[in-house]
Amino acid sequence: MTGEQLRQALDYVLEKQVAPDMFVEHVFFRCLKLGMTDILYSLMEQSDPSLLLWKVYLRAVCSHCERNCLLNVLYAIQLRTRDHVRGAITCVMFYLEDVHSYVQLSEKKYHLTNAGGHLNDYRAEKMSGFHTEKLYRHLISHPYLLIEQLILLTRLSLLEKILVHIKPYLIPADTVPDNIPAGRLLQSEIDALLRTYATKALDFRICDVTGSGSSSMSSSRTVLRNDKYSFSPPRTPPSKDQWIPNDGT
Image 1: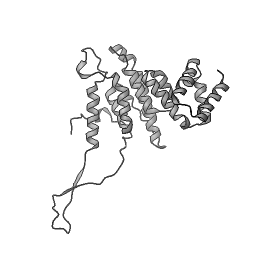
Image 2: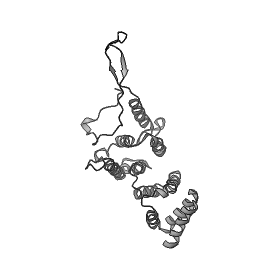
Image 3: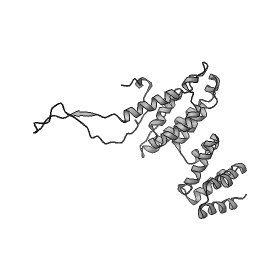
Image 4: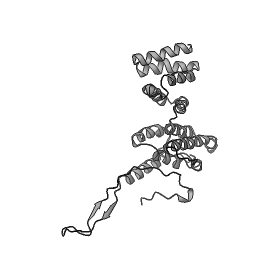
């Protein structure tokens, strides 16, 4: 297949609104087998630099890769589309996959370095032009805290997808072998982390209201304070001496 033939195929896909599954099977994976994915991406970007026209098709490719555990192909797409948060999730999946010893865990540590880099890139874009060089490298040896940063930086609508991706790589609490390395994550730990943030998200702050011109209003009456603001993660990750235990307080 030549580049011109591929261009014509892409034009046909957009013109006829070809079903995403057909694109996945007959266009993307054919290009993958022929080593033409770079040409494919370039042609897609020529028709739409933002790739919004191809959003449905790229999403279908990613879903197929997720279902079939094609993490390398999935990660390549995330790199090309600069999908930093999902790229970080995939790096964590690389790190957690098939680890049975401390040696393997150490050898795969670079995946956490890459995940921290993706989070830093995401933060840099969210700063809207503010200069930042804050990295998450000090969290590399603490996968649990790196997962926590992923949760902080992700919309609620994506949390369920994150859990779906990560769950196969977590260790069920009732089947933990004695020789599992400390770097592996327990499903119960992630559950506890999510419960903590859910509790804090639903927590209400109250303030005292004293009576003013109304004899029926008690000085002990309390009302909800109407604070409306959007949560934003801190500009810099907390240093180790600032970490506090999640003790429910």
